[in-house]
Image 1 (cartoon, helix red, strand yellow):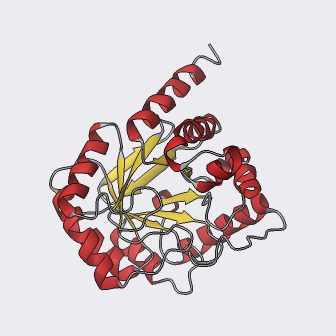
Image 2 (cartoon, rainbow, N blue to C red):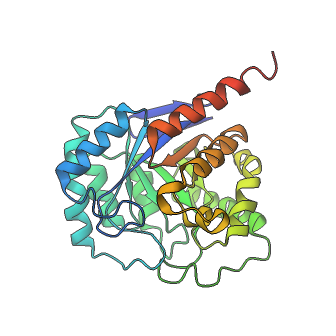
Length: 280
């Protein structure tokens, strides 16, 4: 299995990739405001790469529950200077975390090579056709509802089956738009329109999602379901997030999205070292 994103290529199996998070926002749930300044965001991204991030994910619009939409012009103002500066200093792929085709196009022109799309339920295919045109990587994430509504009352008959069906349907639509399967990363969208129980079921079903022929991305870093389940405040959720990341990698996930890159890389590499001895 391969992942191609513009000039970058990864062949699996290989050690799991860690995607480091750079939120250029004032209101992200975990680090909103810390890296709103372009210089601070670039410095942080370079630090994440030094810590072992093999993808750096830059976002200018918060997707936390209840977050308000950001105008395209403002989102561009936040992320493009960061991506332009990073593209000349960093040797790993830059991902643009956006739902807007205009922002994605500008980010790819500035040096990004992956589009991280949290709005996989698309009303039109403009973003997909952009991905096909540019050869960018594409993260297809499942989410129910909008940031304003998604955590109000998430309902599924069978969340694992429905997310699997969503992936299969979207892969067909992406193919129809000219996006090759080797460009696609699948993300079950932990915390995006899901209850604690839904999230646990999806994490427990990780191995099944890896059978769809695309790299699987899992993002649990600092998310609220950990706090709800364990009573852990935001700054105390790292141990639980590492447990989820390690179990996901053991079940076949290829990419882990995380704020705490150094700790995540270390935990995953230990997990992989142990797994490598299972059949010896």
